[in-house]
Image (tube, rainbow, N blue to C red; front, side, top):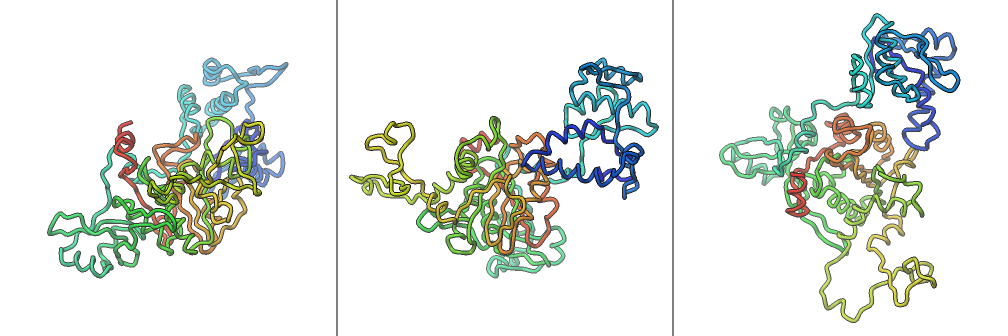
Length: 479
């Protein structure tokens, strides 16, 4: 409400009623609703100011509108009077028990009684369409919208072609760069932002080129890491340029914020979890935290039984799958002969499946997951975004999966929790957004990248090529 420059901002009184429904929630939405109430209370300390409106620092005015053309009497909404546009609103959308229809009626009333043009600003697309049906101008709220980010379009293309910037140099300079590991190019650096990944190629030939990163100050350097190795588990090699770029950023201690765009199967979760685990094993960080944005289609997380880890397990299963794959050391078949599988102990009693009268089936054995010792030792923590507010997280590596579901405010809350010695990685697929309040241009992942790109502590990586399987790659591009 403070972002509209010198315009008059009208808030329908019905909006206050909607905010009142949200304020008891122990969620970001509830916190936002309470913050709006506090701001409005500061602006309207008396009833006279509420009726007359108050001036805003940007030259505009803030007012609350009570629609005088409708009244609730004897259990139903009645029309007291109405202009031509209001009559049209009443005929098209007669059910005034619906909040959206009453907000439309307010917009129609203001459009007929105010001399200045009236614009309804809402992120509700259906409400925008209904307003236009009445002849009212309706707009989305665009202050938090990233309009010109080419990476959004590039990473959503139905193609596995890796589309990265190129820097062309004479062949001898490319060879010198590859052998020395760094080069200073002040003039060429003007086309790149700090920590941007690129390919340094030869203008004399059309070879693949040398993967590189612009480090700022005119300095370019080659990449230092292209693999990960888990102690007691597997080793993985970067399979394409994008994965090579991502591993370089994940292992650089100077980069403490990474944003990653990538469609399904590009390896963003597996590489991120693997690099984090290896660095925790090497004591570069004290622990690894994993969270995922919860966008349920049924009951919310609070209705699931068990501790936080058990509540989050259905949502974090992709990360657990990655950990299981990384920690499962390949074994020879003969190692399994005449051996019983290891059992998980709980207070000295063998754990067993639920549903048997005596607590377990005869001869039943439950194998412990390879990542469970990490959870028990505290090296791996599962975090819920709902409970992150107010925390400070030092010397940790924090992975936020499905970050495309975040709102900009939630993304800010997460990034500002990071203490000294911590790194946060936000990964997501801009083509899979289920949050009704954000889209590919307004979610917290692209907002974070847009606002913080160019900072010395921040790097961004695009992943284009799927490596899960040929079928998954084709499906991601064509379905």
